[in-house]
Length: 258
Ligand code: ADP
Ligand code: MG
Image (cartoon, rainbow, N blue to C red):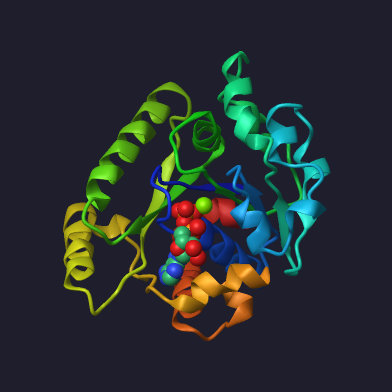
C-alpha cells in the first residue's frame, strides 16, 4: 500500500477538497482506496457522505486505542473508496498522545499492518502537531496543496522544515510527490504571479495540473458528494482528474505493481 499524506499547516488551502477528489479519482481508476480523516473537524468524512451521527469507530480509535485499521473503516458511497472517519474526540487525541511513548508512530504501525487497500490518503488537520506528525511518519510521500496567495511560500518553507526534521528523526524515506496549486483564479493577477513564483522556486515539484477556483468544488460537500461525482465535468473536477493522472505517473512503479 502506498500512503500519501495531504498536508499544509494552513487552514482553508484545499487539503480536504484535494483529499476527497483525488481519492475519488483513484477509486474510479480501479485502485482500492482508503481515505483517512485525521482532522477533528471531520470534513473529509462529511464530504464523502458520512454524517457525524453515522460515525462509530474512527481514526481516534486507531491512534489511541490501537484498533486495527480493518476494524475502523467503512465503505463510502463511492465504489472502491473506503473511509476511516474522524470524530470530535480526535481533538483530544493530540493531548492524549503527548503522554504516550511511541506517540509519533501510532498511525504508521497501524498502516504497516494493514492489508486490503492499494493506496491510502491521509487528510491532515491545519497544524503541525502530533496528528500531522503521525501522518508524516506513516506516509511514503507528501502531497501539499498550496493556495495561490501572497504568503503561500512562507508557509511552505515552514512545512518543508518540518518535513526535513521528520526525515532526520523518524522517516528517512519520506518524499514529496508534488505541490498542487489550488484556488487558482486566472482573472486575479496576484494568483497568477504567485503561481509563477512558486514554479520558479520549486520547479518540477509543482504539478502541471492547477486547480481553479470553482464554486462546484465548494458546493459538493453540502450534498455529501465529492465534486467528481456531484458534477464530473465542471472545471474543478476535470482539474482533479488531471492531477490524479499526474500523481499516478509520479508514484514509484514497483509500489504501483505491489
Ligand atoms: P482545508 O482542508 O485545507 O482547510 P478545504 O478543502 O476544506 O481546505 O477548503 C476550504 C474551503 O474552500 C471549503 O469551503 C472548500 O469547499 C473551498 N474550496 C476548496 N477548494 C476550492 C476551489 N478550488 N474552488 C472553490 N472553493 C474551494
Ligand atoms: Mg481540511
